[in-house]
Amino acid sequence: MNASRRSTIFWSCRAFCFVLSIVSALVPATSFAHGVAGQRFFPTTFAVDDPFISDEFSVLYNSIKMNDEAGGPRIQTSSLDVGYSKRIVPNFGIEVDESYQRLHTEGDGTVSGYGNLGVNVKYQFYTSAEHETILSVGVSDEIGNTGNHSVSDSFSTISPAFYFGKGFGDLFESTSLLRPLAVTGVLGLNFPSRPQTVTMNDQTGELDTARNPTTLTWAFTVQYSLMYLQSAVKDVGLGQPFNRMVAVVEFPMETCLNGDCKHQTTGTVNPGITWIGKYTELGIAVEIPMNPRSGANTGVFVLFHLFIDDLFPKSIGRPIFP
Amino acid sequence: MIVRLRILSMQTAQVLFLLLLFLMPVATQGHAYPDHADPKVGSTVSVPPTIVRIWFDSALEPVFSSIMVHAVKDDTMVDKRDGHVDPSDPTLLEVSVPPLPPGDYMVYWNVVARDGHRTSGNYTFKIK
Image (tube, rainbow over the protein chains, first blue to last red):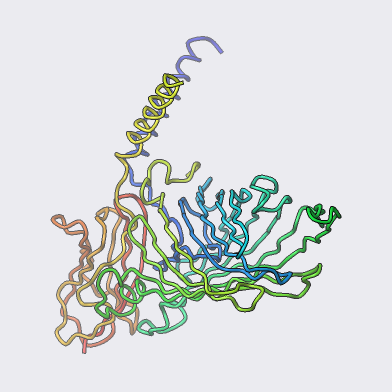
């Protein structure tokens, strides 16, 4: 290839790229984003992972008092979890989250520090506008030894999971007040990277061995969207802020599959409310333990969420490869 | 140490400034959802409407936004096929309809907000 031809190709490519960039800047690239399937908007929930992938930044505060399994004093646990999720392509993305945890033992001291870094990849393989359905699969890894040892595990936990979201809009006649209902959920396994953890007892000097169990996560939410009621079923006259609210009840459950806790289930029931704005979502829920292993009193969740894809739709809010 | 901190602060400020410059021009409106409609969503009216209107909570892209009215009984389109975004109010999507007989009607809407996000939906109203 001679120099003249190379130069022509070079400038043709540059011109093509220039025109492409102008066109992509001017044409509104239509896109579907975060938890939307048809006219159903699935809000981000508190303790149950969402069935969709999106460009979002979230902050979640949680506080609850836990019973000590060995019968010792109760522990007030508080955590501030910060997460950022980013779409690589429109239906595949990655989420990174980190939490700051504080454990206060009654009559004893307080320990605090960062928890293990969590990384989650998710593939939203099915979205049906007509049936208001979203299905995803994903794998998350809570990476051991990345957090403070006093508040986090020294081993990793790998968690493959299946996620679903289904609105009831297509199941009932157009004016049925059941149409705003929806369910979301997660079914997944949690595998520890190390079957057991050996620690030295500070008081006796002996080695303590704790088995790290494999657990099953089965968690779901039931939602009633006032937003959907108002805009798709019946205008009942709700004004701001009620016409953008979704009532949510979460049931995050975890069953131990082996080890000392085999067949034991922990979980909570979390009734709450979320408000969906143009760029943000706010939410609050109470956390009611279903048994003494799950908590000693009623806890609380507070959620703050930024829709990065709505805030910055043509820059950091769009998939890397749209 | 103070000098070094100042240099770091200047660098941080420059990065933040560039980031803001990069982000600010595109910080536009989010998904568009219906705010209210006429006739009202799920309502029963005694006087047939001449125009079906939906007001959204965001400005719409006129070229990519549409509205249709169908009769529920046989799913036929009954509007005048002139659905459009109001030039003087970019949040208003409307379509004309001829005098309609009593019955149930389904309004279908499909819009693109100024930021490029598409939303769609439908609702019914009844003429008695």
